[in-house]
Image 1 (cartoon, rainbow, N blue to C red):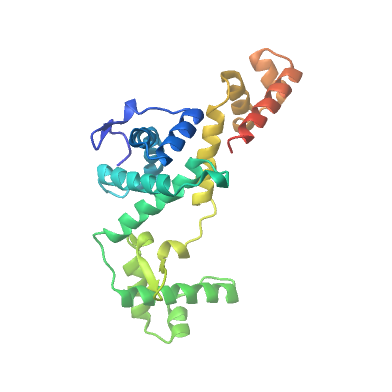
Image 2 (image 1 turned 30 degrees about the horizontal axis):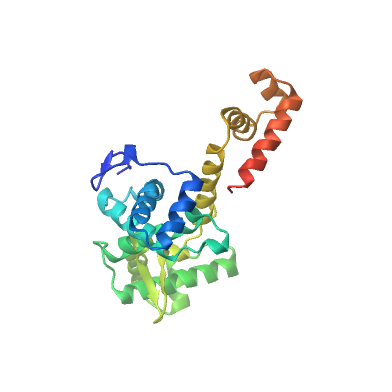
Length: 257
């Protein structure tokens, strides 16, 4: 389900406020001093951040209101633990906190359960698969993995299939008494990492701070691949003016990224 509902948990998302950075700083100082009203306004002013984060979790069939509430818990935890002395933007700190809270909810309340023995077998199979792939420069067969582990091929196939469900990325496959290892930890995705997603969010925020002309020039130059001369011809100014505006826009964006 995409986040298309106007009202979520009784909150009209179309009317959520957008706080200026100066307002956020002032409210944060006041809430740290125990101002309950400032705390409420700060939470409400950051609900758009929660909506932005939960977009990536809405294709799993979960109730959007539940996901939103869990995201709000992550937001509140971030507010309670945020330290301005580190020189990091609140959104940069809060996004991973919100993501982690939603992931824990999806993991702990998933309707599909896989026994620990199966998860352990699947984890060992994944390790063996990586080892054999590195040694032979090709993906091993189920028979080769079973031989490596001295296990029955049927057990290997069954264990791997058991974790290959729509929620398996959030299911623990191994636990050594401390931190659990999830299937997600075994899957490499260099494109859709949390870091890349967070950088993209920061980039959008930075572009939004530009003037209309600066935003249009950045769009033509870096999203449509046009030269400065082509941009100059399109908007009716000199190439030197485009260069100056582009440098100024990039300088302003670096303040927020």
